[in-house]
Image 1 (tube, rainbow, N blue to C red):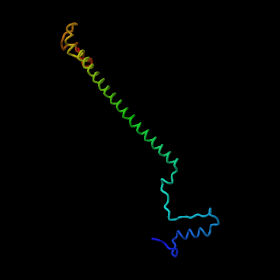
Image 2 (tube, helix red, strand yellow):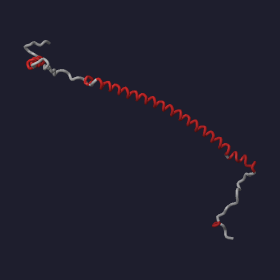
Image 3 (cartoon, rainbow, N blue to C red):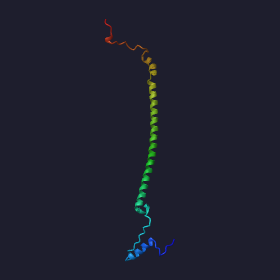
Length: 135
């Protein structure tokens, strides 16, 4: 849609008013109130944006390094758990061998060779003096 000079738009009127009031060309300022406000990205300075990019890249690098270190630590922990289980099994095996060598079966087999006799009378009966009958 074209505008004619008989029906000027608001922009034309502002321009004409600025031309009349300006004493020099350097003082002429045309304010366009219909222009959109600049976006957030346009308002951020380049050095701030670059700093933000480096900060995010540094944070991501640290996070990825942390993930890899955690995985390595988990692998080491699992290896140590396997070693601990192996040592427990070995300890139980040695304990079983010891118990077999000093168990009651072995003692009863070796007792006659050292002069011990099998029986249930180990010593005389001990009586409590308070329970003893009077003579």
